[in-house]
Image (tube, rainbow, N blue to C red; front, side, top):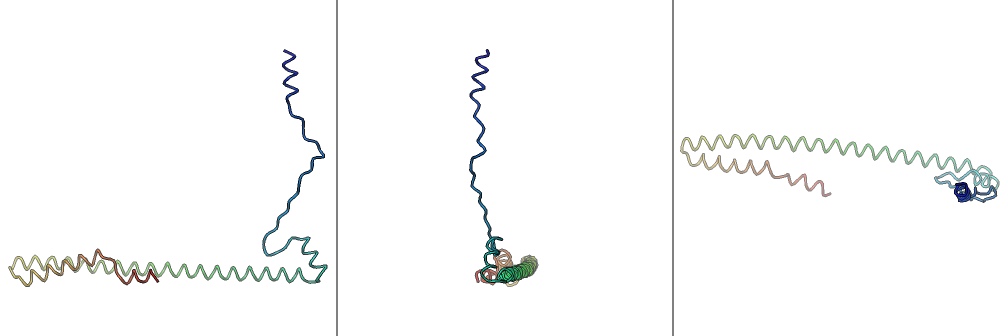
Length: 145
């Protein structure tokens, strides 16, 4: 049994040596260079780090301004879409009301046995139903632009 224990102990890997070299990687991204590069720029051209920082700040201000304008445009677009939807719904309500009135007119024409009233009510009913279920052509052309 002691032989098995000694075999198990010898199978353990040895710890890595302290002299093992590992690479060190540093990465910088964005409009501002790393500190070592800023020091190098200062030694070549005094005052250049301040100019670089002011350029980065101006770039950030411009980007924020552009994002605010995009946000305002999107908000205006949503308001416009909501307004168009209300107008479209209002048109459907009117078409439905006219259709119901035309059905009543058709029923009255049939009850009175008046062919003109009957045919006028029937045609108006058909036109109203078609208007309710067909989308507006003006609305489709605005979306294509």
